[in-house]
Image (cartoon, rainbow, N blue to C red):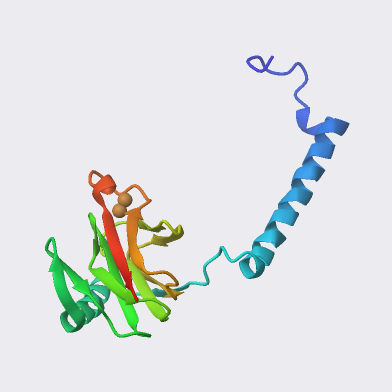
Length: 177
Ligand code: CUA
């Protein structure tokens, strides 16, 4: 029984039972298979993002985002600026307690470089219903190249627990024709 010490304290010298050994080998080989599948699916599976990450301070990220907001805001919605940056440009989305700021309006069929960073804690960018997920860290800027292929309204939810307002941290991206 596990609550009493073994009669002979040589468990590390005992031979491994055959069944246990086979399970160790199976688990090891399966681990290798899954490791190489990760690489394979990156190219063939169309499910992994090819994102880039750079170091940035929250101040600098806020500055760059604000420059885009100042230049390309087209209207307001519930005190959120709706920003329509030029096709093909760098677009910025701030994650902070507890908002995705601003609302982006993108054109269908155009390519953008979407920059994501947090000004405070870790947040999780989750674009719905397409299910694109990116962890958003303070101090790092994640850049994802995106090309929206359908028009409509897309929701952003935060999928990393970030405190009291976590469940309120929703945003949106418009894709227009
Ligand atoms: Cu931000 Cu949860």
